[in-house]
Each structure stands twice: as C-alpha cells, then as structure tokens.
Image (cartoon, rainbow, N blue to C red; front, top):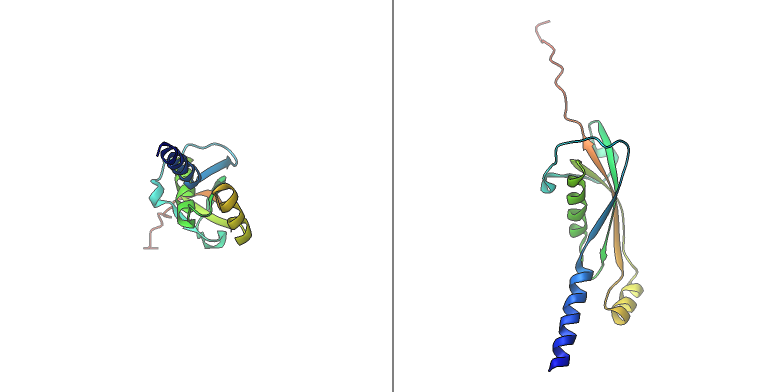
Length: 138
C-alpha cells in the first residue's frame, strides 16, 4: 500500500509540473512606464493588419506547455498575463506549434508527457485615439 501511495504522489507531482504553462518575454525597444491593464482586458489580434491604431511593440512572447495537459486558450491566457505585467494592452498572435501524434504517443509512454505545445505573440501598447479638438462651426 505504501508503494502505491508513493507512486500516486509522484504521478500527481508530474501532472502538476507538466500541466503548467509558462510564458517568457523578451522586451523590445525602450522601457516606458505604462499603466497596467488587467490581463482579462488584453485585446487579442490574429494579425497586425487588424490593429487599426498606432501601437508600440513591447515584447516578444513565447509560451509553452505540455500538449496533453494544456489548451490553446490556457496558452493565450498566459500570454495575456505576461503582456499585462509588461504594460501592454493587446497581443498579436503568431504561430502555434503542436507536436506530432507520434511524438505525443512516444512521449506519453516513455516519459508521461505528450510533447511541448508552443505559441508566439507580440505584446503591444495601442495608443488611445486623440480627439482633434476642431470646431465644426467653420
């Protein structure tokens, strides 16, 4: 019974460790202090063309997590949290890569993990629109 408890403990520990999604960031340009946006309010764009305002690139984001225990939504949330901490108010998604089915199967049977799912994004700060202050009376 003791061996089963130890095995179960290590299995839970492995699941906890591999279920974590981590996001790393490389800051771009000058460090400018900006108000922090709550991570749930970070806007997400699929391409830079969708951003219809002036913006600054804050950082490159790289996220990874075990493909069997993480979801793309979890990865995006991790990116949004990191972007928020860096003063960004939006992210532009880049590529997401999935391990092959063979990698997942072999990884699961040999190591108890399914291979790394990876995602990339650019954290940006979208400048607020400025009113022109022009008088319409002519």
